[in-house]
Image 1 (cartoon, rainbow, N blue to C red):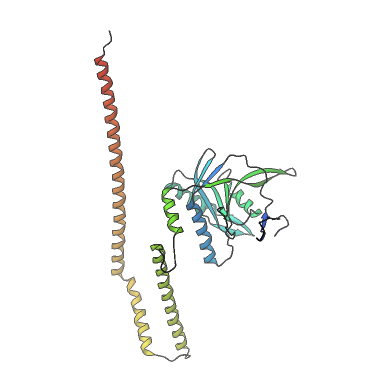
Image 2: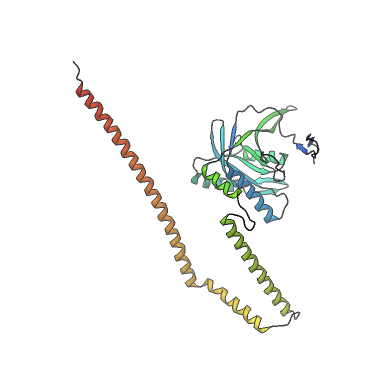
Length: 333
């Protein structure tokens, strides 16, 4: 803990252990009068959690550095964070540097799929903002004049309905005659669509235990993982046997060696020309099916548009004919 960190003890009810909360001096205690209201979608939180968990398991680190971008829409003072994506970072002399080329490429790709979405801010992990977060925030200000900063604390024990996330806005404060960038907490709410509620409910009710009604996808992935793990264990066992038999530490069994050789001889068959042709044929069939489904959906949308246009045109014609008949029935004298 640095000298700039402040400890604050929370008074808890009798019988409970008091918690130590670290208050960062980079967070302003002034009331937030900006009137900004942030709406968070569950997909964003799931992406952030998945990003952290995946990097943690891949790098075998307790607290890896993960940074990503927040995208969505803004209408006046209402900000809606709908999605997010990961960012490529490099550490130079202990400082995190955002890969600008990767960011611009990713933003362009995202805008092609979601043209209404804009870059709204960025996210990372941690219990409170630090000086490193300020430096990263200044890099993000090159793409957005006032980006939002979402911080998730993966190590906070959630004992209430409050999520372990905090959304900050940035302000410029004059301290000792110099301008400093500080964070100020912003209000947020969780907003979900019908599809998101179904997906979140599906994830929340996933049961991995035997005899429970769990997700079929989870069961399928678990079966695949167990099969791959068993295959890896058996290949490792064969490799160890070959090493021991080659070093004369284990008796040589020619029957086992012939079976291993026969197994290895089967592997090059997947690189044959017939296999590639058959694979490409099936792959093209799948793509063709997908294209046909897309064309069918587009045709259906066009058909609905034509029907609506015909209804609107016929209604306007009938109303015009009615006005014409009324004018003929009541001539001017």
